[in-house]
Length: 404
Image (tube, rainbow, N blue to C red):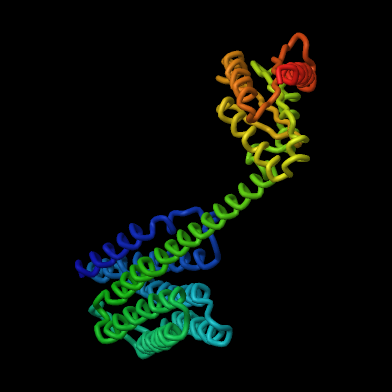
């Protein structure tokens, strides 16, 4: 019987290795009832392996007949319990329809009740098993009936799942085929066990069934979870992109493509908050106004006026490349200078002014500009900085008109 013990031991090791994440997981974190049922089924199989291992060892040494007898009773109880839990898991996992699910539940409960009732009766009448005076094991008619009952149950369930697999979607079909094939494998070994009672074929049956369930059910379910997660993430990315588009439309000026008055208002509020907290460092604002836009609109039409605004915006963005540009009115723009542009503000102002004077001679886009810096000792809010820049802009506007 050494090989018998070895097979039970190997079957137990295979189960624990392949299902360690489920067997040793805290029951509170098992995801759903289907996983909990599968976990209970594994525990029943583990208990069966242990009782079967002890049975083979006791049978070999032959010195503890009472312990051997009790362990044989335990063997049958855990065998029946494993069948009950396996069918419960299959019902839950495959979402089997109510009528057939009720049939399976009743059939497996009857099997378990048969074992529970026959076990004490066997002590009076040898209906399940007995040991002769030499300690040789003999099987009784109820024992054979129990195995045949399981074979019929496995056959019905396997045929049902494989039949249903041909009438459902590919996703559910894989589940049904996996469960059906595991049932057939267990069925074959159980049939052989009937004729060879001293071979550990039922242990091999459970080992093969558990491996198939693990490979094609649990792992497949994880693949489904990963696929669903990918779909969810893709949907969230799409929603995020839609949100960015909406945000862009809400904060972007339709004509020029730069930030609009709403974005400017939020920036002003942010700057005021930084001023109140004393965290604002190095900020300047450039206020700009287009010259003669009304004349162009009245003389050449609004289409030409719009083109004039876009050309002016392009010029502003070319000079102040690293700063946000806001269109805050029909012909008004503002640029908030921070970071590198703030450090180079005088050079940028000089470059912009020279470009405007060149345009004035060439009779192209003319823009008045005024710039002011934030002074923490003088300014209590952003508006004060803006007003100083606005005054300078109007002074520059007058100077440009005098030159023109």
